[in-house]
Length: 352
View 1 (cartoon, one colour):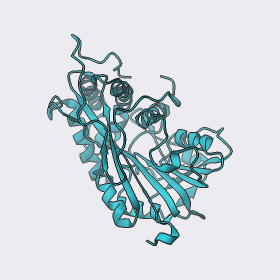
View 2 (tube, helix red, strand yellow):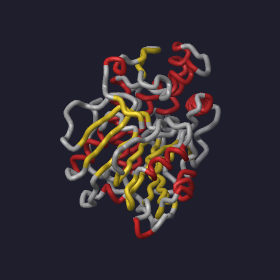
View 3 (cartoon, helix red, strand yellow):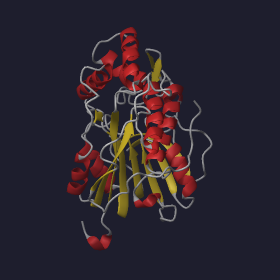
View 4 (cartoon, helix red, strand yellow):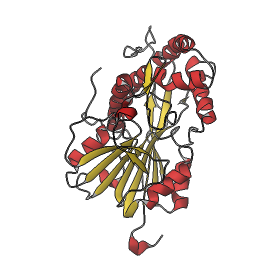
């Protein structure tokens, strides 16, 4: 599947409410009437800064996948071409979720003035590149443990290999820090949020785009005995043992308020596991999320299961057959809660 780019916006079934509200986009998703074959047609098996050097690019090879060499073991998911294609696809999911915007915080308005922007966990760099295109006046820096970004980028965008759990040593503050899917990558969220706060200019914004590990269903069709549910439960256990637990996302709002952020907003969205919803936008989100999951599950669980739970590669691959069957089953009306949490550092005249 080719790497997606900006797609036409779909109409949102619900609009965000006022700041500080927990905004939920449609409380209950209605399912389409099940077809004879309930399997989705779309489903398938389908800081310490370092320059790029030969040793960093000599990636760790394990169980048919490659993993970052810099700070080996801190991030348990692969960085090979298959995973990079999935990250590009997942970027499109966020765009569709936010109605073709790169985020929900005010700096994502093309007319909002920003000077310096930091993209944490930039992955393949699509977000940073597109933000740089929309804000040619801004200097955009993307950081990651892997050098998965393209060589040719806008002149106002650059990338560095960096470990955000090391002391932050940026020379100047940022007007906007964007952070995507860092859950299970951090040992201490409060320390991370404090670093973000300390490295924002007065009046600057932090935005976190995150997802719950465990999906849910409003009608009880997602049950604990399913292979899909078991896979995510075991993944959560493994990441906890690795010291990178999955964070309860709504708690991040309270952490941000405690640190000193103002006007903190938490918005909740839903990614169905396949095309089961009746509503057009959620059906489209389900199509993309189904591809995201079926393409990504091997990479999500392979290292945690083999390193922590002691599974063999072959056992993981056999287990994934049943996991993907559950993901593709349109009689299982499951969805993931995804969130945008953002807030503002007080301006100088506000104190704080």
